[in-house]
Length: 228
Length: 338
Image (cartoon, rainbow over all chains, first blue to last red; front, side, top):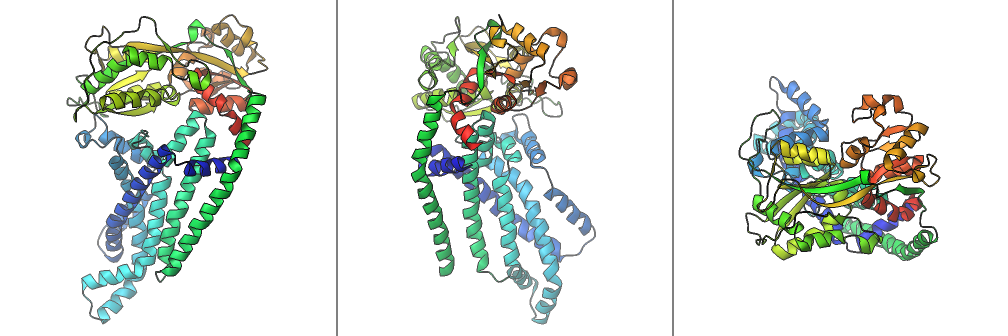
């Protein structure tokens, strides 16, 4: 382990261009997919948490089921859609970073929706009353709700980002781990392991953990500024 | 906000300090590793016990994918308009079969390992066709290949030379031979480079391959090397003294010595299945080796993982030479980590 750690540091400091390409693709993929998931999931989750309509319970259960969607199944689904004989083949998404982002969106968005739903369902009743008391309209009430949920939204974002960074099943199927194009940290670790180069695999694993540490620190510090 | 920045800065500082501290100790560990390797080259016990046997010849072939093949989607419906880059595939094939390409491939790995990893196949097709520069439409070439070709570093060595010279961009998808071929059948590859004759012939018979202009056949075999039978240095089955590899496999089966099988329909697995004595009846179907589960270990894993298992268990294993040499070259560090 200690030698793997030294190897990891050595890898980072040596300015290995392949490593930086892998880190770049990893960041591009996971930041894009987690931010998009946040943009889509937060309004939907808040809406779901604050509204009442027949069939809502079913929708909530479906969302919660989607949270448990195995990445490999998601990857397989996207592969069948995007592959050369699939129905969406003309979009040319297979073995591209954009294809990987879409697969991750399918995985992550339900997490954001599900968490936001439970957060907003918790604070909404009290909030609605005070908003009414102050004579707020719907638009302002939503802003107030977002304000109340700021802390929770950042927690949700951390979870989404962590899933995007650590996930391997879907991205390896949709991305194909093509070197210099769609190879991310997790798929590169798999490739090294299969080659029997455990040292390199472990080193990359440590780099990935460090990357997660830096990203998580930044988000956590942002969260610190926000009242709970 | 200031406090935030201060904390962030502190984290970065700690990180850099750790990094520098570790960096200083790196040279020491490297020299130790070098010493241990040079003092006793095989700190890994696993050794090549048999190689260069005619039954273990491992031929690599190029096949261009036919855009007019009968592609079908997951439900079995025909798909007519699969988009393939045939001009790009032709360019890459013509380059690999040119004198320059073959020479580069055949000499690959000698400097690094002191042994040739691939040999040019005698009577291989030679291309003298002129290779066009890449255009926007033909620029991206997708090749589907086996892990052993990719892991040996052969394509990583050859392709940049080709890309620099003609301006193409080659995307390499690598998996076991079975999956690499399935990938092409799904219309995701312009050409394939694999090493399992029976599966290649089936690919041709199904109409998925096409004849590149100026060539005689679909299946263009151009490189070969040998599989190697590896095992513990003590060699309890006496494999090293066997006359040929078939006897060696019979000896392993007779003594019920542990054998690690890939079990994943890769080219290596296909070859291994053909080497067992016929009366054992071992095929890729798990039911056929149920009775031998004491010693026949079907791992369903990559070559590197199988080699590590063999090392741990003191078992025999069939490997392509390139992966074994990489495995052995890395073992000093591997031992240290364990």
